[in-house]
Picture 1 (cartoon, rainbow, N blue to C red):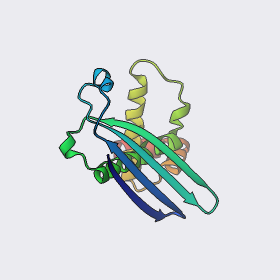
Picture 2: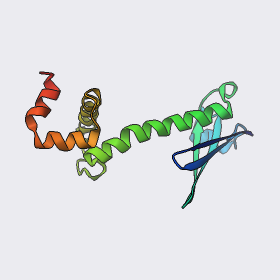
Picture 3: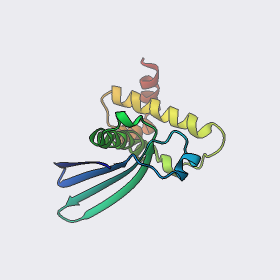
Length: 150
């Protein structure tokens, strides 16, 4: 079993991240997941002055066993959550994406791409997403100028 642990301190909290990687797998898993090479257990503990939370996540990987290093997988998992927080949380906070009732066909994906494009335009203009969206909702001519570049 491979293990790694990292500590971060910032934003008024201490975060402990641990990973355990199991390379020796039970035989029955090969039937359901061909190519599976490891099972991963991620644990994240966040402590601040007023609260403490603990999250455990299990994952699987098909990385080649010789390429698996516990510390690298721990960094990879953190990078994934940075993407999640930077993109999806911002999209939901700016456009209330989670409240959208659009759920069929290709419309949800198309709307997500439109929201991503709008966020890119807003960020390139040096504005913050939510205030910019509110300002453009009130001033459609400014929104059109942002999109057309004129």
